[in-house]
Length: 211
Image (cartoon, rainbow, N blue to C red):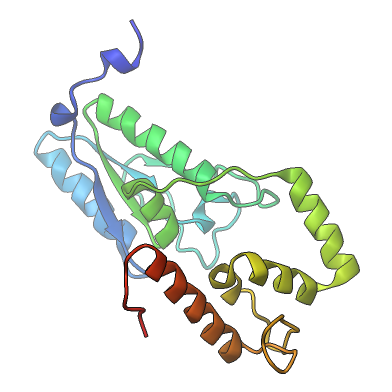
């Protein structure tokens, strides 16, 4: 029998509780308090970290990582799991966190997701899918960045996906086909991107573009 088949029905699983907010606003204390109160009712709860910086070993200063005393005897998960040299990956975190949460629920324990990293929290709570990466393509683009410069890559991105390229516009003007002056600043680029968005919306039957 598979492990999945041995899990309780979804309706029988304990709920997932999320405590979210900015760093230093008392999320850990709140979560520990919830877990301790539940314990007085005979209900087990454990905390699952969703703060990106607290995933790293040694990143204690400035991250409000709870000390052993502050954890109040409540089990904490996904703290100090990565070396500081490791590149952060929301996709990897999502996989770890969801596996941990399902494991706790299968044992009848209420998981309390606690953190201030919005994307990390959302990756657990919502249907986020992260495309895989292509190391060879990344290496090629990094070499082109060194040899051709950022502006060349921004121009190329603009010809394929103007909306995605908006966030890549540097402070200085960039040459861009069709920009009139031969250069592109953020305002000119955004006007062009909106025209492109309007064309796409019209194609799919939406006749009003957002302004």
